[in-house]
Image: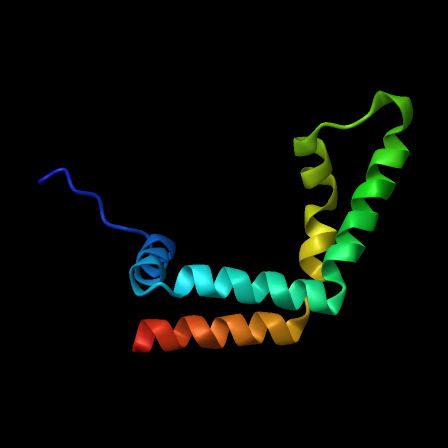
Length: 94
C-alpha cells in the first residue's frame, strides 16, 4: 500500500464544498436563517439557564456547549435543514 488514506464521505463532501466556494455561502445562509427564526435567541437563553443552574460554581465554555448542544440541535428548523441538504446535493451533483 502507498500509505495514502481514503477520505471519509464527510471529508469528501467538505472538500467539494470548499473547492466550489459553497461552504462559506452555506454557513452565511445558515447563520442568517437561524437568526431570522429566533434560534440564536433561544440558544442564548438555554445557555443562560444552564449557567444559572450551575450557580456560584460557574461553567466553562466546553461545559455549556455540552449541556445545551442536543437541545440546540433539536431546535434547528426543519425547513433550514432541508434547504441546506438540497443545496449540498446541488453542489455534489453539479
